[in-house]
Image 1: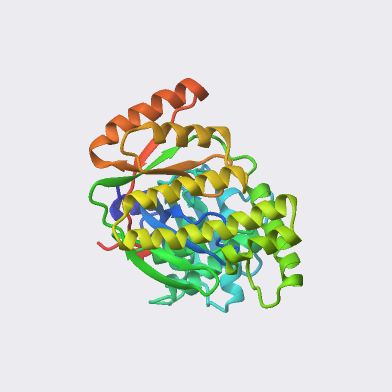
Image 2: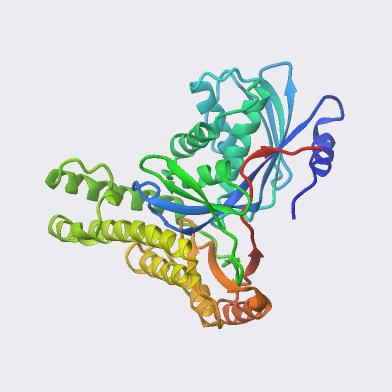
Amino acid sequence: MAIKKEKVIAKFREVYGSKGDVSVYFSPGRVNLIGEHIDYNGGHVFPMAIDTGTYVAVRKRPDKKVNFCSYNFDMKKTIGLEKIEAQPDDNWIKYPKGVLVEMKNAKYKLAGMDVFVYGDLPNGAGLSSSASLEVACAYAFARTAGKKNPDLVALSLLAQRAENDFVGVKCGIMDQFASAMGKKSHAILLNTETMKYAHVPLTLTTHTIVIANSNKKRGLVDSEYNARRAECERALKAIQAKKKGVKSLCQLGAGDVGLLKKVLSGNELKRARFAVEENARVLDSMKALKRDDIKKFGELMNASHDGLRDMYEVSCKELDALVSFSREVPGVLGSRMTGAGFGGCIVSLVPKNSVEQYIEHIYTKYKALTRLDTDVYIVHPSDGVHELED
């Protein structure tokens, strides 16, 4: 449920006082329906913005200081805009810090600010809380610097650079793009090689999109994410030595499998094959949606998870269990992990008239197996980053 602007402002004023005008901005999280781990391989992805995310309240200051405070974390910090450096105790502040660094590099005329952050996304669940925070801050800071209509694609790329270069996670563009460019009742088909995109209507009549959180702490995600990306880069380099003009793994197709087997082995072969096959699944899923074949779309979701488990090796026993239990429920058409992996969430296509049965089934079986609870969210495709109106 959306948080009211007045509530965010009230919390802001508890911290910073009542004087001055306060603006509030919202950037959603995202769930990726299909197309995992290929946004850094030049592939097609199909995420949607969801109706929970990050709220950022900002008040301009007359100096060059930026004060940070979060409703979710007991941590406050003040930095100067003249010199922004990473510190060991940055915690969540490393994300807006990175955004400020990239905005300085892009020659934004940044102002001093009081910044208050409120998030209603579960952290570390694979719903892109970090990208939501980055995009919300980038948009809020740009507006505070006098940009009335910031270029949202450019801001998403700026937020990605902040995570790549300042935070140190070599993510692709999908998460930030979805948070910036989401559209109500639509998902986004994005070609990450060309940055061409289309908003695809997503009006399901018989099924609904349900997210289940494994509540498995994702301790390996950053290091393993970077490791997978490095494996893909090595695979691409080996392929480029044999086939000229190849810019990304997902530029290859089914006819190139023989080449992959010839020049690659071990992990590099598995990662490259997954990328090629996952990209094909995304394109096939678009064809299925066009002919309103939601059953086929679900089958492709299932195949995506199986590839992430067996070939890309980013799943875990908790995610696999949730997927398996989800597929046991009659009428569930597809279920897969979503996000970077090693914990976090799954996403499933559940019949609208069976949601309560679904929740009870997976909760009971998952608890018995893992002793962990699973939190369930019914989500809807929503708009991207924007200022909250009165």
